[in-house]
Image (cartoon, rainbow, N blue to C red; front, side, top):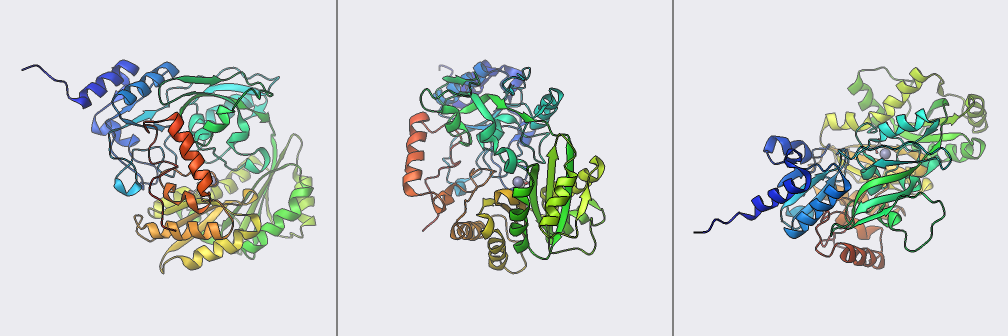
Length: 469
Ligand code: 2HG
Ligand code: ZN
């Protein structure tokens, strides 16, 4: 009888041919860290994890997966929170049940010299945000994007989900940082626009299309990153407020008077309490208040006088001011540890949403009121962007009604179901709540044109199954 190689073995052999034996992980314990997300809410089984070291190897992986009709899940630092970077776990997420391969991009770490004249740099998709920041600062510039997971999150993934973070109110989301991209399409073709020309309107803007496409239209391999001026002089204020409703008027009063405003975040005492307990540190202010705003100003010269003037004009009398780096870090740690403190308390329902600034407080109240008895609802986020992180502890993580209730409230308040983490598989079936049928149909047409076999990150962003109504 002739010997027939089983399809799974053929796939593994093809992948080994594409990236080299050492970079195809097939053993359970080797694959495991790539198969579950940070929240522990999303997980699934992959036939293999492949770690290409070049763009050509990425192209070879996509061709091999296409030949074997295997789905490809691109992954960066695996810090995503919407299930877009780990294999699909089961039919509940609406994805097709076929073999999946995790395409880990962390070996693509080339980082070119900074071009000071254009204020740009070319970087591999696997470079971490933290490494880019260090590199840019050494050249007297900065990355223009920052958030807590900076030392794990990778640039390709940041672009793929159009990440936001704490500096978006000044510099925009990652989209504003993209001067060009290199990416591999589903059929293995490489598209490259890395010249960084500021003015280049020759044809459709493919980098713009791929930005925020969450690995469903192509795999980003390199990024031409637009840097920003470096501002070393910083001053931070933590402002206690009687309620969240006071946060929007505060921002409105401060913003026109403070050109150096670099970050504007909000938190509530529920979240702060959890963080203080988790870190075992004292409260930054006594008496505690129901809500807080963190305002940071950054410039080349000390921005503290401007910050103080702006606060005075806004009628703020009590604020904790941090103008040296140790006290600034202490305050920022209280904000940035929210995710970790919440995760230590359980597996949360986690919804990254955006609402117009004036709707932020009423939306947060409505969410709290709508959650089941016994639920612990923690809201915090980026005030300047109307970006709310809703975290709900208590209800079963598999209970989809919590997510649906929150997202319907988002729609009622004129917002978006995804602000900076992406739609992923977590919210694909709710896309229609804040995107019209015409928009979803156009997205589907683009997806079908660029990935006709549907091998790229199936189940993310667009789903066949949508929530009723
Ligand atoms: C943040 O702003 C992150 O800290 C994470 O976007 C938000 O954990 C979250 O809900
Ligand atoms: Zn955030």
